Image (cartoon, rainbow over all chains, first blue to last red; front, side, top):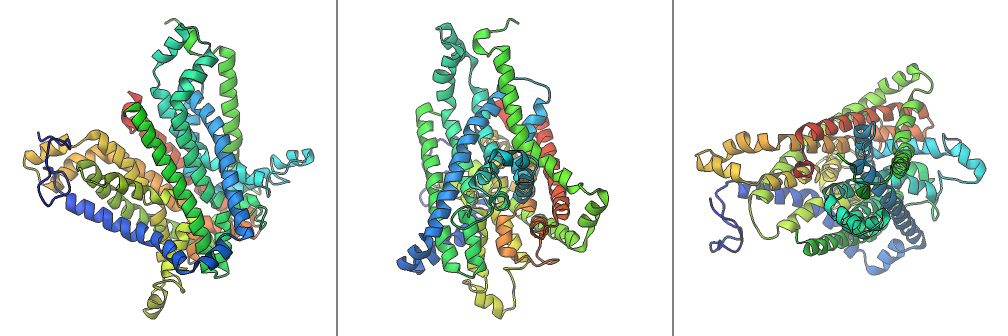
Length: 288
Length: 279
């Protein structure tokens, strides 16, 4: 059997990939790269090219206007808060699913993926029906002075719904793979259960928790369908950045829409980059 | 077996944690699901049936099925090809390719729609050329398909790459050295190995393709009976204060989500798709 470890085989001159007996590299690689370029890369590049073509002054005027800045603050702020809520409760749910058995375990585990499967618009109108001032839960919160729908709190509720499975599914496998032996060692050495969690378990699952948070956060920043029904969409107060793009488009303000999209995308790519660096650091540390 | 008290929590703590987790899931996941069906059937079965069998609803259902029927197979071919290239060969720039495939996940759905408006819209780069040749992409079905393909682009590749990475290439190399052609190897060796993972990816891809809202909303133009998908129809009915109608159509989409979840669970449970974690 031919070995494929990079150090043992020298590439033949003129070829940039390792030799293999398997066929189909040209076909599958060519197809993937062509399709990727046509469907993803060229369309995404138009955003930056249009931004570059519009001139700094115009870009700043719309992309960094007060209304846009308020929208970014709202989108990034609510996504961060929802991500934190999900980090806490997602860890709890993952813990309960991995460590304990209880009736209905399988159903609960399947239910966690509901936000991945339920169309966002459906989630949006359902959450509004629940949290509107006359809604299922909203009618009991209203007398207490708590308004959920049509406030930033409503946006957070929608983003908690959307982001939960990202955290649970990131943490679950790591928690399941964590050997009992380290916990036993900690207990043998006299650690209490809480100490074992704080000093042994939590550091081991923290990178996965951070990954889950980052995924939920990135999704929350761009989320549209589940938010617009519950948010109320008041400019400067409950208008999220994706909605502002749609508003600009409806007024045929393509430059404005592009400028806002560019700022959002740069921020999202920053999160993606940070996430990849984090994973690389983690791999180096654990040698996996 | 003796219970090791030291590596688990006491009964009371365990019950409290389970209760907290279930309460959270009940409020945030189960309640919205119940609300959809309950609001849809608020005025009985009659108005529900009227809403889901109206001409506009039927044409929205047809369009949603059409869009999924195009975008899922397209992404299936791409996903299999990309996974083959990435997992069976060593080449520089591989991790960059994987990152680029994941790119649509980190783009807001609204931006995913916007990029196609900038390309093919009336004021877009190809707009004048398209108008001259009488081709309509934006505010028409092709735009909806394009946006959906973009949104669901990573789904299948993302399921297949880890699976095929784990399976390695020994089976394929054996088949080739025994004289099988590339296609024979793919159909008789690779495909049977990856079919459940592929089905899993198709399932998730399909759920997203049928349910996509933001991207489709930007490129569709919301023309009733023509460019309205089911999620867009839900929005229109809701904004017209036809709540029973909106929730009725929404409940069809919720059924799709439930079917997806059940099929997904069965696949995970019977075929151990995520491999070694459970061994």
